[in-house]
Image (cartoon, rainbow, N blue to C red; front, side, top):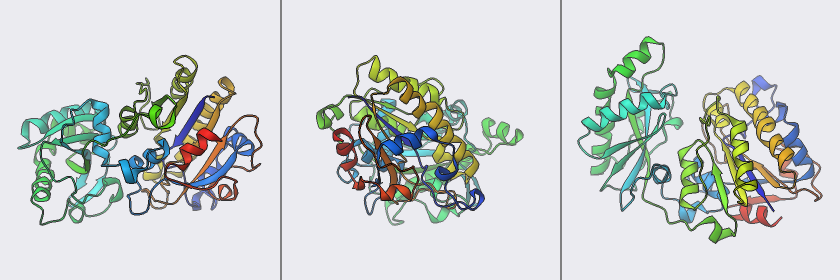
Length: 392
């Protein structure tokens, strides 16, 4: 048996007024998803355990079959695994390049700054920093590594505080020596970045400058056994996003580089599908995990129209292609968490999920956030999804 897990990051939503009071799933033209839903089993899946932040790191760890209550240490270490950074006992922070104005955080991605531009800024930061080291990641998503630091500092993802005073969300507690040092590093980074040639050019072109760093998501290396050892299947992790790829690296999955996979609206989804199909047909792997980031970006930007368009592309370019070329495969489709248009950040509600296996009797229902609650899968949480998917 061959298995595909297709994750549309942040795709679940609330009813959207500009969509006539419907969700993007309810208005999108997604015939392939509705086909596997009508033939498959539906349910809802709590990917984020109570008390944990509803991040893509936590949620995708759950979907992959690793209970984050046991395995999760932070986002930074997951991304570090992709870059081949030596862990030892280091504390690794996610480092966003952000746009601020006064004390307001205007953009968590600095206008989706390019990787080439980010490379120049990271180089400048490394020449300046009084401690630690910066590592280039993907576009605005970079890393900062400390040989010694408190890994339990309170932190806030920058995409949660767009439009707010960032000074109210610095690392904490305020009495912590490491928090004070790192908060000062973030504030002082403005002196280095504000008038860097990259940002002078971006302003001239009408783009947002990457004029400050934001440190968050810190942790040490998690201890995760290989997927093959835990579940008896060999898999591929296909994503443009380093934290998702990092889960693949740390669990012994094949993690290919997909040409044209950007994590944004211009991502080549067909190439992702081709890579997933190749992994099971040519490389002999059992499972392909295909992650799409652009639906989450649309949620963060409050762009309902683009979220609908990206769902339609996922349906046509990924689900349809798999149905055509690997008709005997089992397919699961789900978001990792909601990123509702109305709130523009992640929420922790259970997400809709479908598990389709050819030749079996399904629930005869279409896919959306509400209909899935009526399905025969019922309510899933933690590692239940992966175990159910591989056994259904």
